[in-house]
Length: 128
Image (cartoon, rainbow, N blue to C red; front, side, top):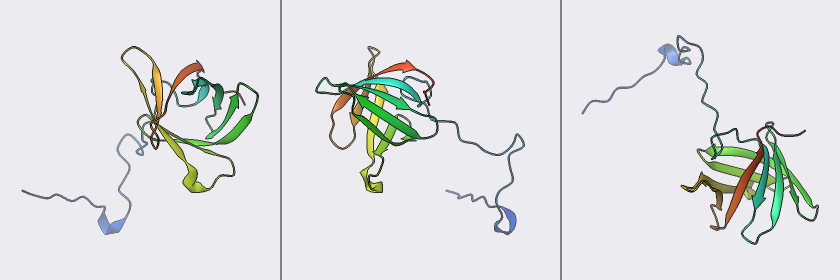
């Protein structure tokens, strides 16, 4: 067995690749589209929410009775969508494992409780 290590001379940052600096590919939503947009989410209890997930990392979620929750979101892995309501402590992130099933249904499963919601993309962009 041999071990090969790579390092830049003198501990400097490695040089950019000949095609330019490395930039990780953007993470996609479960349906293959961008993670931001306008979505309709149906909770396990049947309540429907309209979620405006903005490209700038913020979101708003409006319930059927008009209650609005604002917050921040991020993709933490392939198909892992995490969100946190505004004003909540940093440890209050809620993460969901999102996939499109074989029958074409986008599901969003709470990683800490297993509750499954369904997601429908209404628009790929998001409103201001």
